[in-house]
Length: 217
Image 1 (tube, rainbow, N blue to C red):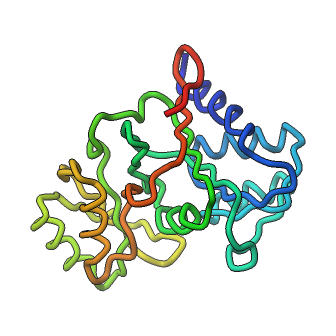
Image 2: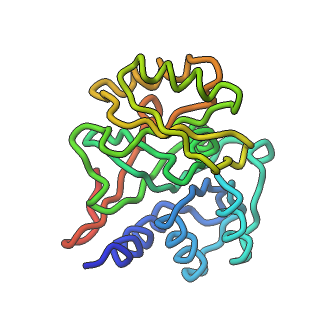
């Protein structure tokens, strides 16, 4: 079964967690795009969606969904988003699409975080996927040096600017055996907006699409 089909299957499975007339958080990426399309095709009525990126906002509005600012919505019933990696403890690496800061804010504001992925994203220990870090532009070099001191190999995602006007460092070969401690350490570096480790606030449920169907972690 090809990856596109797996994304469609897990997107359909996520519809079960959307309550009628609720306000939901919606993430960013190709699997989330499948979820948005599936939500529209289902005819389900939601009060509004809080979007994690400009691209997601455009897609939601294209389907006629109302997009609301988080400052207006308050806490959210559920947040649906994908991931670049997940481990058996539902801890994640996110940010391949560069929306990690807004994604982390929405996850923190949601009562339930449902992550939708396919089996290719599962790992025993996080770190195969480079760890994205959103940084204030003037701090890029300093943060990069700090990441080298922590054992990583940072690479500037040159030419990419986040929706918040910041830059991304993709850090390779990080030791993420203790992702909670690493997330705290990185977030304390001046100039870091946030990092793509979702370990302190991990997913509450991971839906995983594979050849035998959709399973839960």
